[in-house]
Length: 483
Image (cartoon, rainbow, N blue to C red; front, side, top):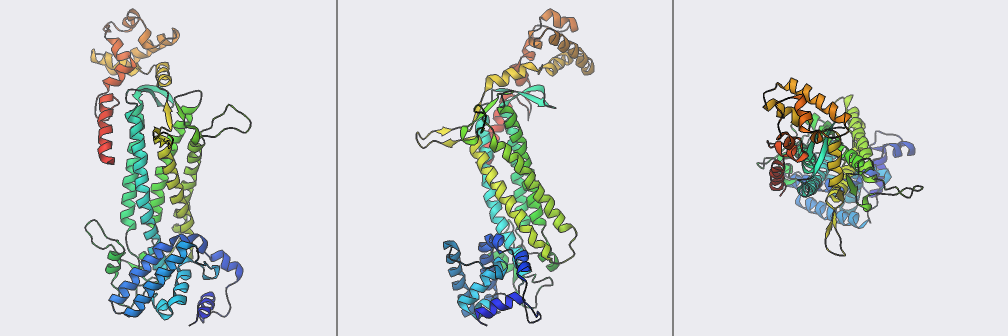
């Protein structure tokens, strides 16, 4: 069959059709201009399939070699920008197959033996997503490392810890940052887990029922690296499920949504901390913008935009779940709609992690070779803010409990002490000893140690606590984990 015949046949699909597809439908159903990013995965999957067909004597050695030559040329053409993507050929798969047939003739037509575009696209998306997860994991590592580095420089810095956005108890600023390290470490675990389920081979499921050809699907899985930690091939075990399953895409987008939620929470705090009302941090100018009308403004656009993009990624998750909810087995054209939200989720997440790692960790100034941080900490403003909210009130209650008072009674006693401090416009630690003893006679001079911010910090010296000794231990643990 000539190339022209191939193109004509692809328009009408088979002799069954008596008229070509309308131009409107052609544009509506085409995916080539967004799914062409799958080309590397498509060629890898095709080469693995061809190698297996040759090994199984389903195609001859000459055909296999021709397919390899043709795919090498197509790779060169795509990489150089010389490849012509055709709307008439609908998607990345038919575009590559048509060009292969044009280059090597009948050998190109034999490549599709024992497979369908249904299992082909499912394989391509899995291969592509696997490679993207392998790029995302190092980005998560970089962001965690940047946070650990800033934490290490601020172990002794006191930050007001909040609940309900009210000053609650003093914490180490480093301890606060390490909370995000914990979140992003869980994200990395989730992506690694998603990768494991993504790394399974649908190819060989054909359209929906398997194939009559003696395929060695496990051989293809090994060739493509779709194996478990023991090197055992991972193959989709049910052909119906193999072509229609998009759980892996939904799982990935769920993990990405949760990761972006963590970014968004951190963004919200950076936005608050950077405002004049807090003044806790400054973000480097290269990550901020000004105002077109107010010259004094420096806006935290990067955190704000990340906060906004979180809604976009969560929206993609909702879209993918809705896409799948009413589909009967097996493959349906609806599944073409899985790619754009998945592609955009990957792009958004990668860009966000990359810019946040740089914004937190800083970058090397080529002029002097020194690393310039992206975030400057105002330790004095943080400590002054911690003094405003009676952050050591719980410490006074704990002090009274150690003196023998039941906690509920201690809680009530401290409430009266705070009320007195409010009326005198001073901190608890500034109340005279005699005034404190008026609330409970067991209070002695050593109470001022527990009422100090530093004393409160040091007192919480339990695993997971905010005491500097514990924070340093956590930093060391993260350093070992992150390498």
